[in-house]
Amino acid sequence: MSRSRSRIRSTACLVALAVLTACSNATGSLLPEQIILEHRAVWEAQGLTSYSYTYEFWAFNRLAGQPLQLEVRADTVRSVMVVASGEVVDPRYFPTINSLFERALAAARDGSLTTVTFDGERGYPTSIGYADIPDALSSQRASALQPLP
Image (cartoon, rainbow, N blue to C red; front, top):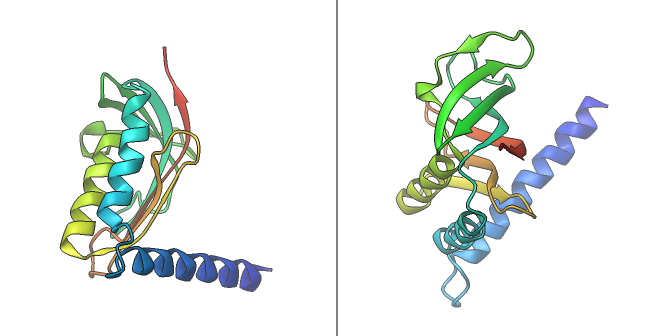
């Protein structure tokens, strides 16, 4: 069963990479940077500055690979909780959705972006993959975004 999931995940990554490669060709197709900017416009049009979402990242860090619940108020991460344990973590080091867009754009510009996918309704990045650099951030995921009052 896990072999099947691994194969599906690998196929999805290859498809995403192929899409990014196709989007950056010389035939006039959209470049990855343009695709990110279009999705950011969808996100910004909603005017959400207070929301919660589940964040995961992969890097050399004790919190890597664990779902974290982030609460954002006035476009600033105000709280972070490890979903599995309820541990509260210092929010200063965690990204807002706007920060995820900035990270994706920076990676697209410097050539280290390998994949990026977006939420179909709200437009925010749901997965960002980076070229492998030892001990560095290799990917990030955002999901289950909920607006807050």
